[in-house]
Image (cartoon, rainbow, N blue to C red):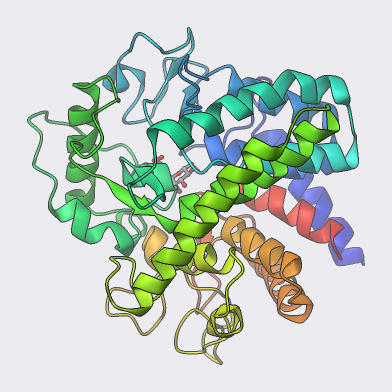
Amino acid sequence: MKVSRHLLQAAREVLAANDTGVFVKPGPHQYPGQWNWDAAFVTIGLAHLDPARARDEVRALLSGQWDDGMVPHIVFHQRDVEYFPGPDVWGRTPFAPAVATSGITQPPLLATAVARIHRIDPQPRFLAEVVPAIDHWHRWFHHQRRTPAGLVRILHPWESGMDNSPRFDAALAAVPSGSEAFQRRDQVHVPADQRPTDNDYQAYLSIVEALRGESYRPAPGSAVFEVGDVFMSAVLARSERDLADLGEQLGHDGGPARCRAAELEGAIARAWDQAQAGLCQDGAPRTIGSLWGFLAVPSPAAGRLVGSLADPSGFGPSVDAPWYPATVPKDDPVFDPCRYWRGPVWANVNWLVVDMLEAGGHAEAASRLRHVTVDMVAENGFWEYFHPYTGQGLGSDNFSWTAAVVVDLLARS
Ligand code: 2M8
């Protein structure tokens, strides 16, 4: 109990220290803008600590919404930032707002975050203010970002939030090299072996160069990188259901959002069938993103998928590696315990997994993972990600979403 109180206070301090007054930075040094799904996790934590501040976090993110509905992956509330690629690289497009932003999006978790605020401190006026904007974003996904098979179509690995996940390796290798020279800035505060490789960055920037040339709106099928992503689709499906509930609170018809959710869930179920038949690029889940995506949708395979979270040689804990789930199975040849989205444990992903296990009625598995996640942070600190074997903190320290999800996980005990 004392440990929880101490941890909660420490989490509060991390969030306060990263608060710029306009938005909460993901971390003290590494990421100076407002990132989209970071803002959603931060909102979930702040909902418990200070709902009014949580509402402002949502408003700050939505100030970056484009005319066509897209909520960008980064909102640069200050133009002059030590981050690459910054506002000048992203450039400006006719449908962008006054504030500088990137030109791509990120996992749409905002409706879920707003639902958390609403559960703790309901304010219909706030819902009336933000629900239409989130609905616009979701409709943009529906109309602009679906593959023929119905999955969410992503145009950059950064859109998935899991940048160097091995599930993008094949598509990244096929990206033609751009012509612009650049210098990375992401290895100043974090060791190079915990970040994506230079080859990854070359491809990331080549995609940005190509997308910028088409005002970030390439015709379907023509982009240099296009992947139907199960994880993004499942995040959106879940958010659509939250949005439907929120809209109904306002007397709106939740039917269209529920319909979009059902379509996405159908596409994920078909992707799973194809994976089983060996036809799908995603294959059997080789990354935690795909595993979560498949699990988030009711399926006869749910028991087996939940079981894989406990597999000691795969995603699950083992005697020598107690922290889990690894973001890539430990027995996969590309597993790397330190390199970003290729193996380390991420507290925000654990939050998604716990939440999904609870919703699916897997109370014991949820409780086990909730405790492990809280212990991992209590023992090692509020790091961006963690070594599955040693628990060593990796990436940025004092990371906002780690603090925010701990606040929520503690509130669930
Ligand atoms: C990481 O991504 C950014 C690019 O968007 C980067 O590496 O510079 C990812 O972990 C992403 O999921 C996260 O939202 C962002 C800020 O925490 O950092």
